Length: 241
Image (cartoon, rainbow, N blue to C red; front, side, top):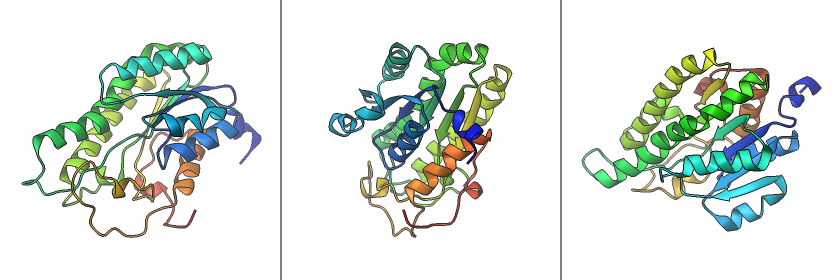
């Protein structure tokens, strides 16, 4: 990695949503090491406290409509602006189309689809200001490989991620005019532990997934190099951390 690439993050005010998660945490650590000024979000205040050396921490439930504005305001208050967002939060649900109840469908779409949409909308004024200042703002939203390859037994989860990918594709075209880069990342199954704590149902037998650190490194490298889309094919084969 060149010094020029590393300099991309130096001094940038970046909000990491889901920073306590299996993928959000290694991304946050890599960004902190590259000199970013971080605002770290998570639901678990104890886990967040252990990350306070990396930046400002803010606990919150992203399923609530007012959380997006609160996260943006906290970032601006802490670091005098907002130059980047990494959205690494989400929930997974397993079950057939006949067995998945309405409340699960609503929860899955609220967290996986509506929450990042709300956050982007709340962040637009600050991101626009960053672009006007020539700070190359970005939004990186992690959807999933199921957006490209919907899976049986995961219809609700697949649909929530496919809807997010479609939104990201359209929004990216709008934001390009404002010089804001929006990237949709769709890594294959990654060993984050998410499948072991589903919001609903029981996970099927899954193949060995990618190492979270390898996925985090790929995402950070893509941000540094100016990529505008990260399909599942952009990620390496499964490996160990």
